Image (tube, rainbow, N blue to C red; front, side):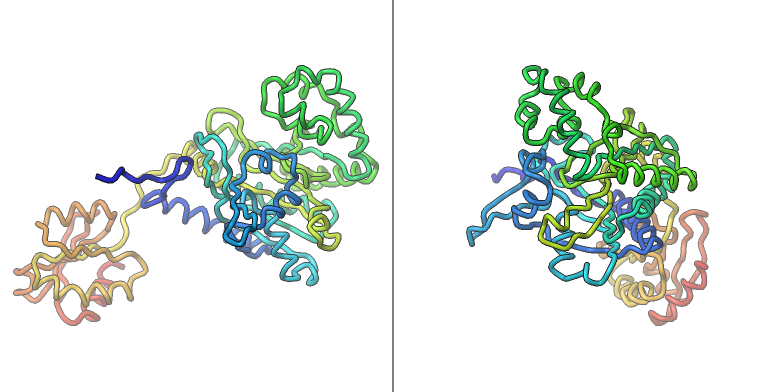
Length: 424
């Protein structure tokens, strides 16, 4: 007997009623992004490996450890999408979107990273994100953060905290690099293996290390604010002023650097303790050099990404979903003759009603049909049996109020019209 097949480790299936929660969240995201003037972009699930090496950075965990990379039949190195920003920039360059002026885009879809599966983290997960291109000023940072804050607070995550930092630009970052080398260098022997390897190549990554061996040294590292140039400091102060004016609370957190090499100036995270320990709901920042690094014009950008699995887990932890209200009609045919009479009625109901019409075409007893209606969450049952056909009328049962009424049996359109009228 063949072995039982299952989903690959670190992936999951979504089916009703859980899939309805995804649909509801996606609908909210589409509406919110639209109100802010953002349009959806959809990119391929796989891209050239070089896109992520150049765009994300060859010293990041994503490129070094987590990418699903393969060689296709044309001997090309391709990678399943581990993040969205680099593919979005690639698409905007390929289709000449930046020539049209500022670009506001959002995305929804799966990403792929090889990591140890755990609660809320999967090898195939899903992200929502925002990309705002063409604005160098702090107003764009504020717009992107405002959109994120609207989403988080709209779902009632009352303990959400916005953490901000500035990691400078090409002018002040070299000074910070030297300060980090001076801080971490004397302790190199005590650092984790990854941090020792990254110390000379990219010491900023040490601040983002999750290895306990690095924690004491990361906590005492110099802050970026101490070396910011005048332009970066002015940008950061203006962003903080905008947030204060809008009543969005924030904390300056010098430990935030984000895990990707393309960030500069503003970086931010929104955290919550909804899952029992402080964890990141979403994060992002500014990436003014990314478009140029991928061969495009000098185009500033800012955005964020949110893991949708963890966000749904937080929502459920804060407010476990109540039983959804009953909606729709379950068509119940008791016997072949009744089934033949109901098929055209079902077709007309599905045209006329804006709620589901459920149908089961198997021979069952009435009680079994009603149990199926309960499982489907139907509000009404439209019942046809031999007695109903002989009397020239159908029974419309309100499954919530447990009351019956009769609907004249006629053409499919006539019955559908009567049901629509009776269920208003």
